[in-house]
Length: 467
Ligand SMILES: Cc1cc2nc3c(=O)[nH]c(=O)nc-3n(C[C@H](O)[C@H](O)[C@H](O)COP(=O)(O)OP(=O)(O)OC[C@H]3O[C@@H](n4cnc5c(N)ncnc54)[C@H](O)[C@@H]3O)c2cc1C
Ligand code: FES
Ligand code: FES
Image (tube, rainbow, N blue to C red; front, side, top):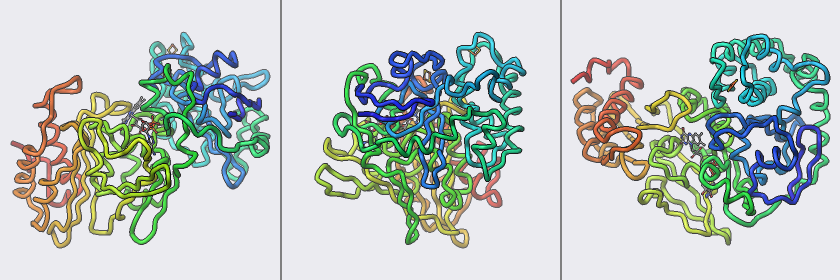
């Protein structure tokens, strides 16, 4: 049985755990405010909020796309649709801001925008204007024009600057961001019977890969929710970081310790899709998806990471991420195995990390070519280097020869030019919808140079690499 709270109503249902939340909301509950648009996670019309009860009795809300969310993933959660954000006789702050700024026309996208803005309001952190825009990164409107929507977002962001962080929920209710019943949700969630549900069927984590392809097939099936046995926790010990394969991209972005080791983490991970997808997309899903342009795969290949893999009888084995990808969409994972966690050596003060991605659109797009580097330099000599490159081979590629070539050599323009020549021999891009093979080679070269210009601006300037 799946038990959760939908708006202010306790739901206990026997529907198949593979059914999408969108289908359940619209067809089983008749709540038509949540719209069905692309059904691929792109448009945001189906955005709802998913709230998880925290240890301190507060609720952590995140925006998600209900078209890619299996019912298994809502077990024990508070799910909020636009109907659940309505106040009694007036508009809530997000709705009012949209109205006042003429940020709606046909209205199809509007419930999604209202939910995303309400999710922003419910965040426990201080909110900046960038957060306001980020919150809408997964919502598309095809008729209003984004300037008026942006103005509405700024208005909401401004109001949130006055939030009383000691009594957040009280403040949000008092200031008409959310209805009063939100105050009772923590107690209601605590009283919900949330014993682990179904453990049969195909394994799903965030659903952002699987459900794009198989939502209709999975509708009538049971699935296994990875959170039943895969952790999303991060551990920092003995100069090593271990991350549960269930951690989402947002979990990484919000982790203070991880940010202290990777100061540009947020900037890098913002390039991965939209806020809704980042809230759902897990590390494990990104590796098993095995896309040659998987951003997480490229990111963690450069950190020379290894995976802990577990089978159905709890035996474990470790495999280096660079050996995990065997061929196009072929990975070193047996049917009875799953990825438990990923670990890597934490960068020391001499180690520098950079991630670059070029896609047709800067945000909300998959890469044409993406790349990362972790390079340790002491007294201008390279001590250790790891370079990864996506979109140039059948797998997310660790560049063995290029990485080795950089080692134990003095950092110079000549070295980078030589290493780049080796890189070109290591890759075999093909022409496809995202670009010609020639274009991808060009991007690979430029992004390789970009790493060094970004990491060592006192040594390298853009003009150094002009040909
Ligand atoms: C609109 C949109 C934009 C996207 N943009 C990007 C992007 O910019 N960059 C990018 O890299 N990706 C992108 N993706 C792809 C996707 O979001 C990522 O690959 C994501 O990390 C997949 O994780 P998930 O948890 O949602 O996977 P799921 O769909 O839950 O699972 C994917 C596969 O992995 C398996 N699996 C999941 N967890 C485990 C585990 N622990 N052990 C073993 N098997 C497991 C599942 O069985 C399934 O076969 C995008 C997707 C969408 C819909
Ligand atoms: S329907 Fe478009 S993101 Fe879900
Ligand atoms: S108002 Fe019509 S799609 Fe946004």
